[in-house]
Length: 314
Image (cartoon, rainbow, N blue to C red; front, side, top):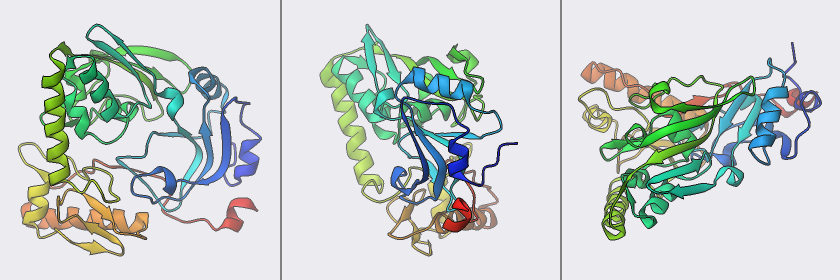
């Protein structure tokens, strides 16, 4: 088995790349919460070919995780073992053809909504209210304001752990409320969407309304990571949280937002343990008060135990 204790030794076991392989990179700078421990190795591929060849040749016993812009993500204080792949601007191409749009996994959701509006393609305005990028949006069937990705998605191109690239039509992705059937180690490379032709002014007006509503109702200026819990069937998470007296609840430097209580906020200096612990306290209070068990929408990954710098390099 490949040892994961020493990032430097792990680096020597990896295939050569044209992108960047960096060891022991603190991930807090890459997450919206601004928390998170180090990745053993952070890989920023030069392009899709670089990524495919790396995944194909990477030893199978080395775990691989993927992050985009770090929204809807909580990296634990102990960091992530193995390889963390970050898909950046090299995966942000957009192609418009008729009423269809092909977007790379690194394209911001809000950018896709604006490109579609500028092209007179309606139906994707809701993405202006979804934090993050297309790869994550497809994986979790992201949605807002009554719409979700499955309403406009045609297909997704994905890379599996063996290095095989496949384009799956919508029906094979298993999209349901805030989840998909994609394997955990599958990487979304791009997605194809279809809207409908509409006047640019009409589409832009909808986006403006969504943006305005979001600014007024959500803590978009704070260090947060989007909605914390999924809405239970027929209910809304924020109402359950408010009913349970959790608005403004604190743990360390983490706080339940008083502007929208389905958002957790890093008020400055919070740890991942503060944020996750606060979320679990909210879940417990809601369960005791209402009998409803909230489910996390934010993805939580990594190790809770913090390794010393000496332990990481000895």
